[in-house]
Image (cartoon, rainbow, N blue to C red):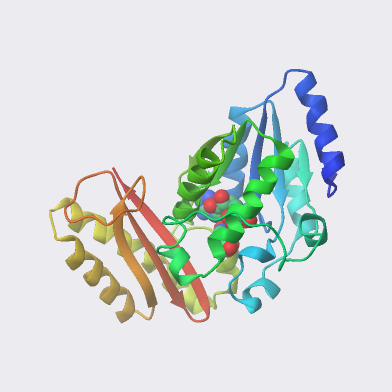
Length: 280
Ligand SMILES: Nc1ncnc2c1ncn2[C@@H]1O[C@H](COP(=O)(O)OP(=O)(O)OP(=O)(O)O)[C@@H](O)[C@H]1O
Ligand SMILES: CC(C)(CO)[C@@H](O)C(=O)[O-]
Ligand code: BAL
């Protein structure tokens, strides 16, 4: 596997592949790789001849400084995963390379509407940070294909919208949520859970599964959202939202017209978890 943190070197490697007629897929990550990321890499491998993985803990998308400073950075272990999975190139720049003038003066990409609701409302500035860095990564790598996880469902929709609006010629693929045996969505932040909370965390997914069953039985949207919220609060979660939305744009719905998606964000101890369940 090749590795660089330098845009010029990245461009020249990718240019070499293109000259040979090879297609390139990009998997953007923040590192601390787990089986969720590995599923994205497998998808990328099926879609292209060459797979580029980026690892960059993007300071522009963090709304809480302590979340940024405590974000797990495990580059050596990540490298070993990428080599084992046959990734062709790791792009791991530092913040000075991507934001040479500093964060305050960086040009930004924002996605109004989709970027302002749910996660965007709860994490001010988050999606502008995500859209900006993903746009930069698309410009740097110029991939034919890019792969994102459905775990960050709103992010996946937002990246699709951003690429379409800015005429970036990349095909975006979503990969279903990869879960632990007890149903908890794999996430780097799970490592911050205490042992007791890690056991309880599986109840988040179970809550969404129960909400899905009620939805299919014809329950009213708001009633199901409220019932799921209360059930999670009873077992110790501090719920930010449980929302049943239209799957393709997260618009609110009055009736259960599929395809929908059930999205949730909730705190357990000091850890913020998100999960989602598409209902087709
Ligand atoms: N369990 C999962 N299933 C499918 N995709 C996932 C999963 N976890 C992460 N991804 C995807 O991997 C990509 C990189 O995500 P990221 O590096 O932030 O990992 P993470 O484990 O989600 O970390 P975080 O704790 O920040 O949520 C994103 O497209 C994300 O949606
Ligand atoms: C897409 C991403 C790599 C942009 O920093 C990040 O938001 C993530 O890991 O989901
Ligand atoms: N996995 C989404 C990136 C974030 O939470 O900042």
